[in-house]
Image (cartoon, rainbow, N blue to C red; front, top):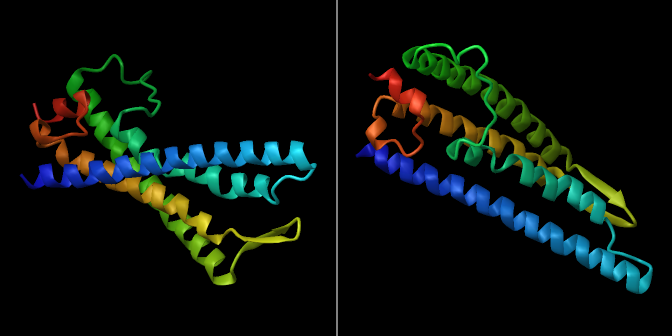
Length: 178
C-alpha cells in the first residue's frame, strides 16, 4: 500500500506542475495580447513584456512539466537498437536507461540549483525600459523540473517490482519482473 500512497502523492505533484505550466501559458497569452492591444491604442506597450516572456513564462512552461511528460509517456524514445530484442531484454535496457537518466538529471538538477543560488545571492535582474525586473526566481524552474523528473524516474525504478500497483507503469518494465 505504501507504493500506492507514494504514487498518489507523486501523481498530484506532477499534475500540479502541469497545471502551473498551463496557467503560465494562459498568463503569457493574456500578457502578450494586452501588450499588443495597449501598443495599438497608445503606441506604447507594457514595459519588459519580451523579457518577462523570455525569463519567466517560457522557462517555466518548458521545464516545470518535464516529469509530467514522463508520467504520461510523452517523451520521445528511440528503439532502433532494442526493437529486435525479447521483451525481457527490452525491459532491462529501459531500466538501464532510467538509471542513466537519473544520473544525468541529477547532474542537471545539481548544477542548475547552484546557478539559481548564485543568481539569488547576487540578486540577478534586468533593467529594461526604465523597469527593473528580478530574474533570479526564474532560475529555480530548472532544478525543480529536473528534481521532479528524478523523483519520477526513481519511482519507476522501484515500482517496476510491483507493476500491479504502479500508476506510472510501463509495459517493458513489467517484463523485468516476469
